[in-house]
Image (cartoon, rainbow, N blue to C red; front, side, top):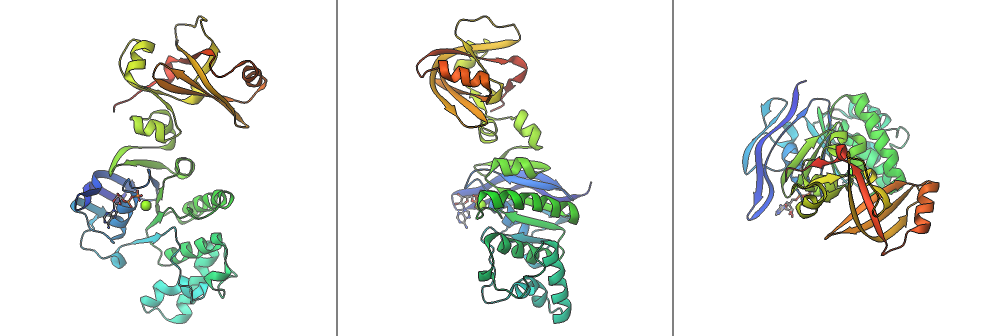
Length: 341
Ligand code: ADP
Ligand code: MG
């Protein structure tokens, strides 16, 4: 597959602030690529570099196989959707969507026809004459999408586009964005700090931390094979067993991750088969969460968490388990993932 975007050792420093500190990755044409990370990790900076609103302090950046530095935003085959919509309040929806074509001096009839087409694409065909104030949050975000799509960009950049919406609408828009991506067949680069959102929508995810990329992988790979402590705990909150406890548990002082749902809870002092590892500790809390039950256990100087699917067995376990009680946690060796850093 042809490459849509390529970063080669790209950095962006603001004085002493290393917003982006030497990242390399490629995005394939047609891919749904997400940049996931906590606030301040360099996601928006990366997106602004792609859009051309920023220039790299060092490194090189290519778009569709061509060096991008020096190409202004409006000459890039790229458009951006922001979280805050950035619609013009005094213009109608149709005028907002057609704005990019008006700047390009496309005649009125033609730009309005294209704007209507773009609005139909985002399922808002009959709202052209309203102003942004007459729309709901979800509808405004659709207008922002239509406006970004009207120039038919090869690459669509989305910076936390659903961040301002409530959970239910966010989930609905996630599905719609996926459908739109499939229909258009263009490259989507999606910024989010929400790991669930990234896991559910993306072909691949780059995990950002402190201006660097910790790992790039498919959602399943990231979830099951995290390479670092940060990825293990940020993506799906796995337990990270640190070296001191690892030395006791497996006889080797190497940190590893083990998912909460792979932890079984048992009575202290019971024998376990050779393909499992067991540690003992003191129950800190048993939390009923509806579909799941979470048990937090103090093991040595660490807190480990077991997540169990709610059943009669977990209900019975909760009945006989109290904070302060000694308990065993065990897991299959095959579920342990050794960490690089
Ligand atoms: P994210 O989108 O992951 O939350 P950003 O890319 O916006 O993170 O920012 C990364 C870091 O760079 C943050 O510490 C931020 O404060 C800093 N930063 C971003 N833009 C600027 C700027 N124009 N001037 C100074 N610091 C900036
Ligand atoms: Mg940001």
